[in-house]
Length: 136
Image 1 (cartoon, helix red, strand yellow):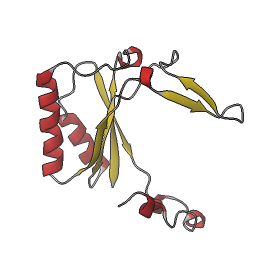
Image 2: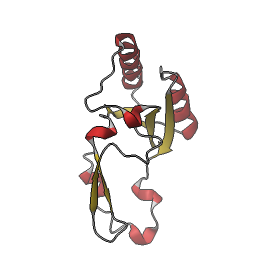
Image 3: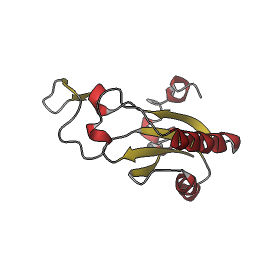
Image 4: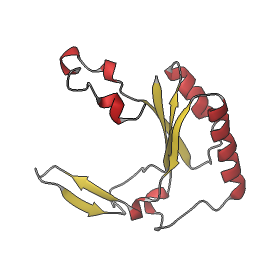
């Protein structure tokens, strides 16, 4: 089963556009962690995300799409990156998250990815080509 490990770095919600990691040792440690996920055969994908000041939000609460450019004043926590891993259990995903060389301001949220089989039987026809869309 697939899990996303969502990196939530405190303070990133107000980072200036173009902010990049500046600690080479931390980047080296994170790359070593990424390699360990890859060598274990559990890594599906991983990416870092630019700060919200370079992003946009599209809301639909008015019935029409409304675009707001970042940064987002109401944001308390934002994503800084993610991993998708394929492991046997939630406990295994949490064990991988615990091995991450996270900094003191970082939190990893572990969330299971919805699989087609998780949806009710009456929706299976609607989802018939979903996995093909994901290039899996």
